[in-house]
Image (tube, rainbow, N blue to C red; front, side):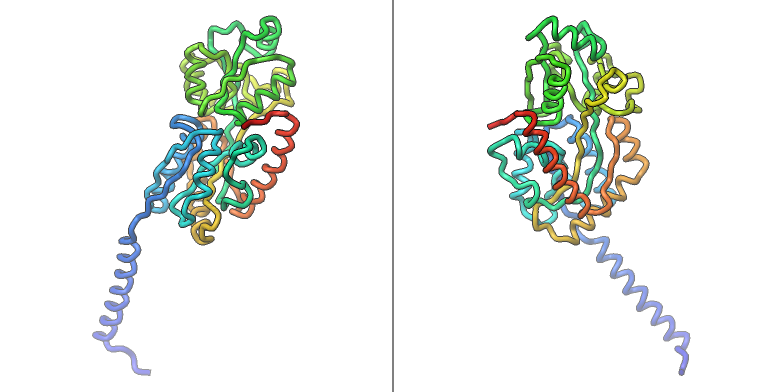
Length: 328
């Protein structure tokens, strides 16, 4: 076989190099897409904080532009309905949470989506543990003192939640049932406005995410009575758990997950899952989640995430039935 001459070899190398350069140029010149991440709560709430962290990291990984869009109302269900009816072209996703997926459809008569059939799961992002807080002027510093005060002063205490049917609402209803006290529920459109009123002294208590309450606790504007977790939180090591105070059966947390509208192409779901996995395994994301009181949690595949939605939907349906809470 005749060997290429020196000049022919140069031409072959030049041709291959030109082809590679063209490929690289084509990839680098691919227009970045604008991807909206829908959030069912106002800015400043824990879900919104995590969404903005993800948007920044996913943009670095994929080269696309991610924009967080807040659509608060009905405990996240308004945003879920919007996402369900959005184009399934990969340009709209939602960072949803347990309440919107698993409890609201059992609570509200008017949710405009099917949690099982209207969405494509991508993967879990994190757990958000809850902390019971009060205004510093309140005359109690732990759960036992709170119970005693509430029983001796019926009708005096109020508690804020991030919305009817949210974890902060249902978990507090369960707490009141377990300890036998009566507190007036005051629902808000998200945790931020509710916590603002607790800080102002207009509402007595709130059971909200560690991410939402941590800045106020550190500044002294709120007093943390207990973390509703099995172990103390790294960001609040001085706050005892509910279990430490004799209430091991009372735990409260919610999870966050990325989802697309039903019909989004499988390659897009897989690509987003891969980008999410990369983001979640970077040290800075883990550190930032820990700083706000979130606990990173990932799915092994979009299929596992979808199965988890089905499981949570069924189990929380039973919880809602036992609670007796029903909303219009």
